[in-house]
Image (cartoon, rainbow, N blue to C red):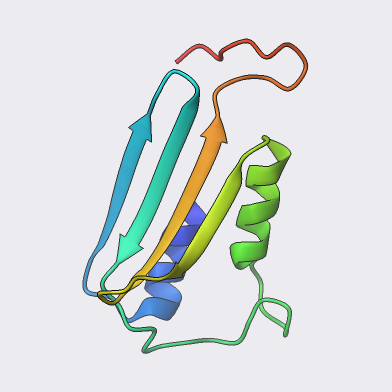
Length: 97
């Protein structure tokens, strides 16, 4: 989510951002939303930039058997949502919280 917050400051032109954390016995969901309109876009990381952006977020989530969704919100702004299972691949046991 650090990358999502960095993207808010670099790209969104937002006045505010919010982080939402929800967890159940099996799933951790973290969302970062902003009220920006993308007023200050910069070149993608693949064109001489320095970060991994959304691709890196998706790869990191996938490495933990999770997923990331990102996109513009219907009422304006942008949202990044990471869903991460609270179990290990090998044993399917819960992680201590």
